Length: 386
Image (tube, rainbow, N blue to C red; front, side, top):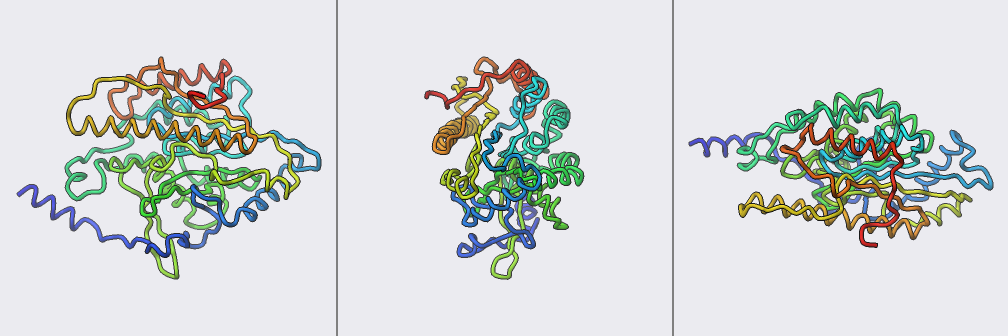
């Protein structure tokens, strides 16, 4: 009887969404907003227009960077996924600020937990205390409420994300959005990655562009994007984003950006020199990557039970994918003459967590990252094994 009741409840819980038809996926857009996103696996068709807009903003707000003969140093920051191990990245950034050598980043990208760090890293060291609070104060109960039965019987996830939504609402407010808009208008870019699960493709969102759009739903959309980027499929419910195509409204299903890429900068097909020559620019570029995880194998006995085997297999897959993403970024950097700089959790820092978000473990990770950043982190110039 209980099982029957659960099945009936799950069937009646919500109306089915209207997904974008296959033939319209490529043209679907958020109503009233233009140039706010592009596919992460191909160069945007309006690349020249996007680049020109950024150049004009830089010329207006920071003319020294684009004056004739200038060779400005432009720093990019890419922050990976990693769940609670984002505490390492938060600590590293704060320590880097203390060291006094942390640059203002021209572009900041984030996926999953990296998407939560990215806007604060983008806005600079004033927000280091906020990142410390997020990654040392809150435990699992502040991010999710477990609901395994509903998740297994007709539901969309094993956990309820209402606590996580409350945190996002608290920290991602109108004041933060105004600051993101200001920096976007200076020609800087904040890019957040999600996965369009219907299309099986990565989506890169121009978060600063959304903030600067003036659209009445901009803040709500930004919150959805940050939530979606960190919504692990199966563990957290997917996030539905309303779009229009061919005059009709549909709902796209977006989940964790780490489903398609653990860390990114921009589509691999881009050749930056082509746009540089058109705009007569000669910048020197550096790419800093914070990998919120270890690169070496972490051995441990696995119980011969279905969930244990599945969990370990998925975590192994994610680690392998993340390392592959580093090689992809290294190839992109070499092609575009960008200095490659990589940080990651040292292998001798053992994972002692007893839950998804273990504050004791997160504090240790934060402190480790802080000490490494403050002492002058020795950035690795190649992916592991090269």
